[in-house]
Image (cartoon, rainbow, N blue to C red; front, side, top):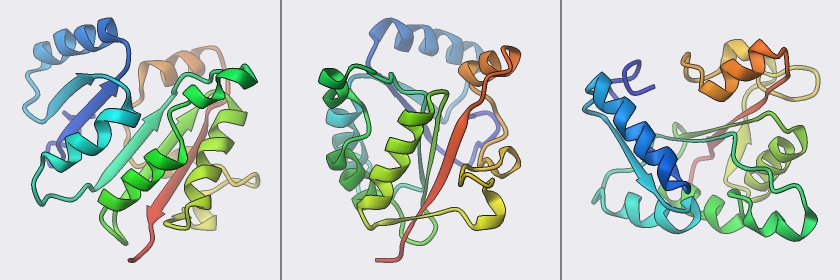
Length: 170
């Protein structure tokens, strides 16, 4: 993603430190100047990371294939929570900033999308960019680069549910 969009600074936040170390190793091979990784929970590090940018506002935020935490008792561990949505809304550029969501678990994708929409700060992609069930069409994705998880789902012929939400004007 960083190589395909040198105009953007990309920060990957991952809770599992060993995955961050591997991502850092791989990104070092590509020598991307606009890419950094951070180990931690997005719910705790997102706000402080954005605040450290001093005056810069966020242009986009992607939440891709987070752990589904399927047991009801563990759902409080899911990444997309109202507090994180509020943090993202507060820092995302109105009218042009967007959030890209995707998951290979339909229930989780719907929950993430609904949480952003329930905040009142976001609107869905135009109808012509969505399928009959309201999911983002593949050709309307904001980034052409596919994650490893997307490639794996494609090889297995499994669906991926996506949503694109734009920050409403203030």
